Length: 389
Ligand code: GLA
Image 1 (spheres, rainbow, N blue to C red):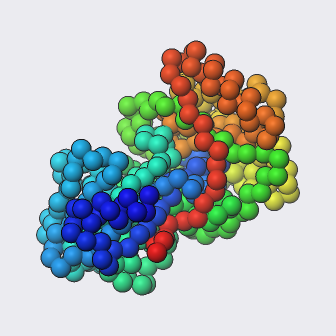
Image 2 (cartoon, helix red, strand yellow; image 1 turned 90 degrees about the vertical axis):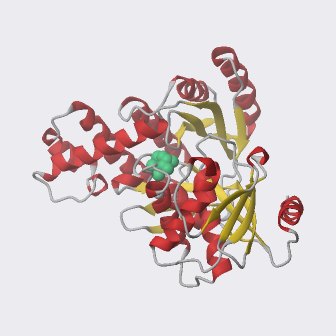
Image 3 (tube, rainbow, N blue to C red; image 1 turned 180 degrees about the vertical axis):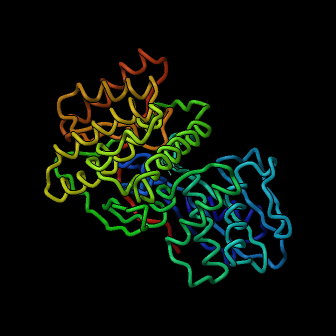
């Protein structure tokens, strides 16, 4: 792929002399869903799937963006003198948003740049292709313009800032953080309240992590996501009338149970319950992993799914079919929806000798029930974003 990107760069911009090669991964979250904007814990890992880019500084104030996944769009041109979101920029609003976020945070570019990208994260699957693109851009800008003081966590925060304020999705920090700080063969146990994190080695001797792509994405994703956030904010405000807490992640399930009558609205109550218990499940799951208790880890994944389905209500029929089918297969240790929800993917831990059955039988029944094929990917946990040459 590297050569193809450089060849395209040369074709578009005359030569590739002085251009460099970069990568940022997508992510899958093992447990800790919809906790990142509630001050709770998450446990994602970076994938080996991701977005590659070749980039070089220019002399003038022009930026050129080209995606080899979207050749039809051609070269998108923007100017440093007009950092605004424009419909015609299409996908390039993501890298442009990062340029804008850098400027907002005091890291103004003194010239433009050219950038060609290609990625292998399946589109619309909820595996964070947009976060990968944001973090990729962050790594490129830091390298090309010599912003040596920025950490990978800063790049994750700039990516989130651009997505929230330039591209209109009120996402948490998990996706950008995983793409920026991923480590091969490790998941990231992140406290989103403090941004303190530790790596947890994932060495499953006799099992694999399998992502199943439902290949559906329901259109309400962004609005429903923002609604969930609001419901949690309202539930927290109700708790704050009596409790000294700054986020739902501050509460243990016991503290929540003792004070839950403060939340009068039944929908807000369910949302808050999920956020509190999911945070505890994530802490418990990482503990189980440290103790090599993979069965417990799987059980917590299953409970996570039930809570996301019933209390947080971010699953959908197609995803529930995939999870129900997985739960019935001997050798499946745990299975749940992963990511924002309303379609996208499930993540499952499957014993090695059950992997073929898992893929064949779920693949067949899903097609019969839903009418189109699911896709399966065996997870290889990769490193975070970096320059590769
Ligand atoms: C999306 C968001 C994340 C996180 C998850 C749900 O992926 O981008 O910040 O909230 O949904 O856990």
